[in-house]
Amino acid sequence: MTRTYDVVVIGAGAAGLMCAGTAARRGKSVLCLEKMPRPGRKLMITGKGRCNLTNNCTQDEFISAVRHNGRFLYSAYTALDAQALMAFFEDRGVRLKTERGRRVFPASDRSADIVDALMRYASDGGVRIETMPCESLLVTETRVTGVHTAQGDIEAQSVVVATGGKSYPLTGSTGDGYDFARAAGHTVTDLRPSLIPVVTEEKWCGDLMGLSLKNVTLSLYHREKKKPVFSELGEMLFTHFGLSGPLALSASAHMEGPLSAYLFKLDLKPGLTHEQLDARILRDFAQNSNRSLMNTLGALLPRKMVPVIIRLTGIDGDIKVHQVTKEQRLELVSLLKALEITPRAFRPIEEAVITSGGVKVSEVDPKTMGSKIKDGLYFAGEVLDVDAYTGGYNLQIAFSTGYLAGLSI
Image (spheres, rainbow, N blue to C red):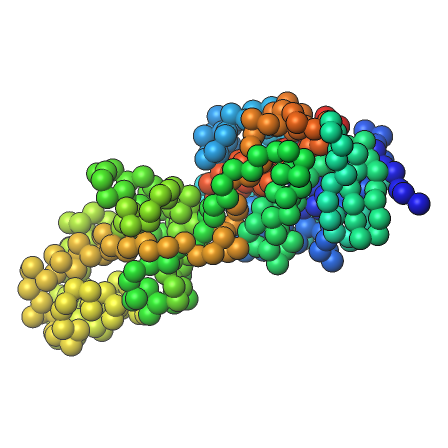
């Protein structure tokens, strides 16, 4: 027997659960299909398992943080802005905290608290959640009438595609939502990785694998421009292939076209000017005049980094610091203030935090998230061609678009 619901939501992530719960509380019968064994799998791993759920900013600041098609999100963000989202979770017993860069996390640092609150919102509203992949949409010439699964067809007045992008496929985001959209007649723009680790030309980055740097400034330059296209203070990580961590991921969002056109400059001591850093090194040298350069720099840099920096300066690491010339010392200062790193490639799209590109927004009504091509079809979250920088903005997009779709169905 064919089952019938008012709404079928495909995907039980941030956008899908918010949409399902909102529609159910409006009296709709809602079925949420999730192909993974547990809902909210990608939410569980965001923010290193801490879940940076939004950014405590104004509407204008939010829109400016969206890289592509920010204006499309005005209605969605108005329906559920950052302050309303924070109240949503706090009203459901999740205490929140705001950290550097206005990033908002659960006070417990447990992303499971966010997933649990969303699950309660959906289940208490009467949403039926089933672990079952959707294989295709049921589509007529004018509308979507339901979904097809391995267990048969499910009819619905409305279907919401909230399947995520192509990043982190182990969490269920394998790109099938784009196939559903195309089958319904929608255009899917070019898919690109965003917020993704960067492979570098320099092999010495691999020597520093596992080293995490805090309070450094990473700047990204286009080789044809004098001013950096990105520059931010924060945390980054060296890996066996190059760079990762928040700063590298944020910088990657600004890199379009061939990566050979870009250059990183890493300031290891952003709190000091060149002159102040030189004075600091002079003091260290004066206090350790008979020690080797290799042993003395350990007070200034992480020990793992010392041999790499010395190798890059070309100075003999065994030289006594009182033998270091002024020219060599100034070369060291310049290196510490602007360590150049050359990007070669992005890691595979599967390692991206988000997918850039997706369902063309000109084919979606921004006031409802409904399709302009097929009646009864809605989109929410990363499957749309909207993406933002790091800092909680992308999850806010998921929650806001999901909420608006749930209100509009």
